[in-house]
Image (cartoon, rainbow, N blue to C red; front, top):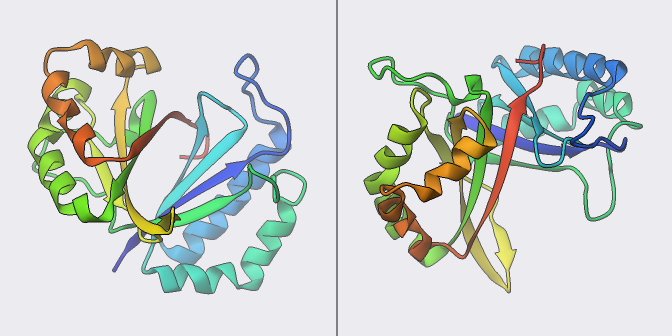
Length: 224
């Protein structure tokens, strides 16, 4: 089964919202890594920078399976990439690299639906929904019910998402996580959704989650 890689890379160099520009040498290293990832996996990869904290980079792409990705992680090609980024990334502490997978191909677009890829939006919302295992089916049913409300608001961009494969343990219990991507003109455009009348219906999903994490991303120029 094809899976979607979701990797979060905190940068070692200080970057602020006032000056979010990435260093030229880092951009070149990211381009080199992108070329390797796409060559080995056979799929396209996307790079993003978090708007709230520009020192955090997101990498998404596809693999034929988790096992196929794990083979690459142990390969000499990946070891060379790790060495390439040894001074660029934070490897220890409470802000370090995290990497996991989502079920299926979250990039897939139905050609019969006239919507654009979320990854072409000026601002991309990345919403992590933390769902108790026993409420997974109820959450899925409710999200299917209200998904169109968000999609109507975020048009022309498709709403996409997937379940996290590697489960987290919280207080000794395994929990599910639904990761949702949606596109907007700006962060303010997204935040204004909560002030609309249809949002009153959409927010019914709150009853099936333990919590949320909401971040906003923008594509890194030259790395799409």
